[in-house]
Length: 212
Image 1 (cartoon, rainbow, N blue to C red):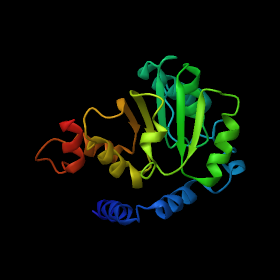
Image 2 (cartoon, helix red, strand yellow):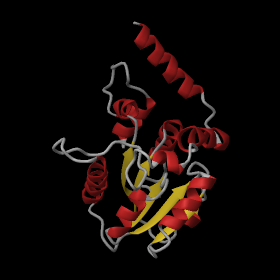
Image 3 (tube, rainbow, N blue to C red):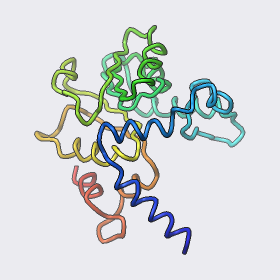
């Protein structure tokens, strides 16, 4: 009972967090700003802190993270004719993997410190364009002028996942600028997206996802 109550309180606190540029910067600060030397003590060389893909359970952390990137890129079936919009590029691990498919990648990152490291990490990739900005406020029309059929790949933090998805799914006219949308989210958000009508988790996000 206590654990369930604490989980609900935590969820409410996250929902009440200010969903603004200031709020997003604070969210990033709490997760990233301990410094790369600290994370390098226990993460893989890409400093990815999200879960890896352990197909057999015997993989090292490095192997599991590489397998995750490979699985994402193979599922997207990208090639030289594709244009990819990556939201939340971070330090560029997925960005580099996407670029290796031959696709052109526009990588969006909001954080001042992360975007500088991202630019360094992808400097040798002529097919990658780094954009420093907030995905909720970008001028999409000029940014996406290079193609009329984008593949969107997004690693969305909790505080912007729902509003950004809702914005994309409510786009008119439909279909929008993207031909496919692949997002990485917390499990609880994914469950809300796939919730059935009349279930406890069913709400606006589920209705939008299942409508489109």
